[in-house]
Figure: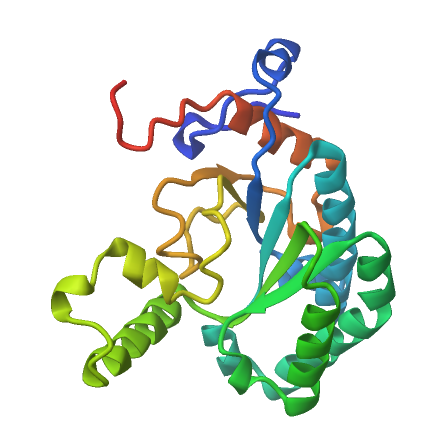
Length: 253
């Protein structure tokens, strides 16, 4: 793989780096970007790119198992994505339902906990019911696949603030009780560890309202690969780069 530009903050991958500290992130998060561009470049509709993106997700889930990653969180549909053309949104909702129904048996067999974070009430009722059913069936499993659907980092923080305000109005908490731990406890999945590594595909270098609270000390890795083209080599390069990072979390150098 070609050496990444220094501006991306990625470490060039070589045999020496791979041997330095082969530590996998416990929680890997991915901004799956580039499905639409992948399809357009092939003269196909954007939804074809999203279908190819589902195939890429399945591959990455397998690679996470091989690498020892315990939690994979993927940015599947943002709160802003509702503004997309109705046929694309409708197609994506059907794609989510198909994924859940077709992969539920595999997730149960492989003991992978399935979760969705976001404003679930915004989703079609049938899809929300399918999500709730699979979440219940897999609730006891250790490995996790988390889909961020109708999700926005600002929306998550606003929803947390709303819950805290309601508790304050009910006299359950006082203003002095509000600290980082309390806010964190009101997030969509407060039991999840913060992501250790966030990968964004397609060459874009922005966070796009993803896990704003949780990513405070996450490492980032950017790759030019469009999400459907994201390969095992790309995955290994990201983890190799992560293994070389000195994660001080604000501590001394």
